Length: 466
Ligand code: FAD
Ligand code: NAD
Image (cartoon, rainbow, N blue to C red; front, side, top):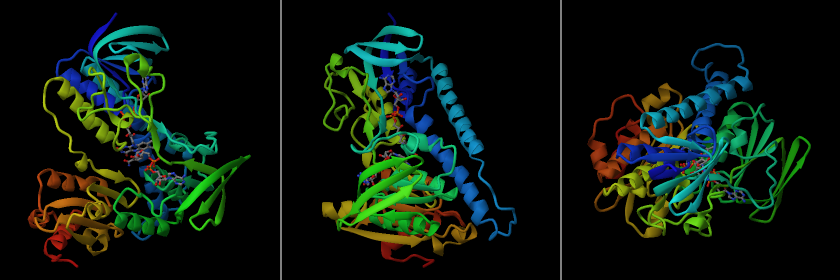
């Protein structure tokens, strides 16, 4: 029987990063993955393929709608769906191969198969090539999540689909109805909107991306509406019926007014659920909580002390970089170190165009906590760089402590917000004040100047270019 210092079940960004860090720290490490490729949801059917399609569709959109304004004449572009999906598949397989290379480089044993506990130190691995049992002093559960659903919806995966199928459609839908105006709904809705589909979003709450700062929800919805996306907010879906190639979605709004939408595809994006099926947790002395998560303490340790859990399968944001931080944390904690994660500083991004990115507290959270704060905002339309690239939608908003000026939150809806939010993370990690950012030189002309201007606005209400 093979024996390991640590076995990791699941090779998503949580699992594979944990494996590399464990190996770097000298532990004999095995990673168990039920699928033939490594990388989990993120690399195979999540972050990477969705961003590949977002980029392709954005190029198409620019060619169709913006080239002319730039003085570039082309014939009307056409979508080659097979090629677009094929390129996405290539990006995915290169990225997954990269993880396989890293496993080899770090001398990590990759065991293909479903991992299930026999007891707290033995794991059965049932793969395509047979079955084996390994012994592991410590185990990290990193089994991730699966798409959630509403109890009355039958996901046929052809017309009533989840994000996984939406990443491999063979045609551009005529009318895609999206249930849930969160991250997946808006990102994948944007892909098909840009490619020419009619896209209608039905959202239960009174705003899209409801967990982000409400100014960002408003800003993004305004721009997406301008791009042609349609919205029904405060609307509860109560039936989804498929008739041949068409799908009928029935909902009621908050005044109980009935709404019926007919389309050819319905994307269900109402959140994801932790995944523990097949793990046989009971044999290890573990069970899930009422949300289906594996319960862990602040060290990601379960009630069985040699078993840890990280990523989407535990509490907290379902984000790849959060899973990665937890993977590193657990490896270092097991090595006797004292690692640290500040969950308040894990950034959140929606990769629409414009992008939305945030770190720290939202204005709603500060109000609820009774914190005295001040705000400073700056619109991209006042920025030379944004006008040069025709990316004038959106704004930067900074929230700072009223007394001390310490930055408490940064929220950006605008071009390259996903990359720019790193400035907010660094500033907040070092507990910078808004004035610190206001006094730092930002290269001209760049989009980051909007951050400096918003910081000036938060400090003494003295932006230069507004
Ligand atoms: P996962 O990535 O889900 O990996 C878990 C792995 O465990 C899987 O490979 C699974 O096969 C394996 N497994 C499960 N059970 C067993 C078992 N018993 N035995 C063996 N193997 C098992 N996050 C971002 O931060 N940025 C983004 O841009 C982003 N975009 C996304 C887009 C989409 C469409 C989706 C669906 C998600 C996106 N996410 C994004 C979320 C991100 O993918 C997840 O937060 C992340 O993958 C979680 O990592 P994880 O390691 O916890 O689990
Ligand atoms: P989400 O939680 O972001 O959004 C779900 C939305 O569905 C919410 O706005 C919610 O109010 C709405 N909703 C719930 N029930 C509904 C109902 N009955 N009718 C209408 N609307 C309803 O979830 P998601 O978009 O499915 O994404 C799942 C997870 O994947 C998220 O937690 C996210 O963190 C992660 N993800 C991240 C990224 C990224 O980082 N860019 C991209 C995709 C996915």
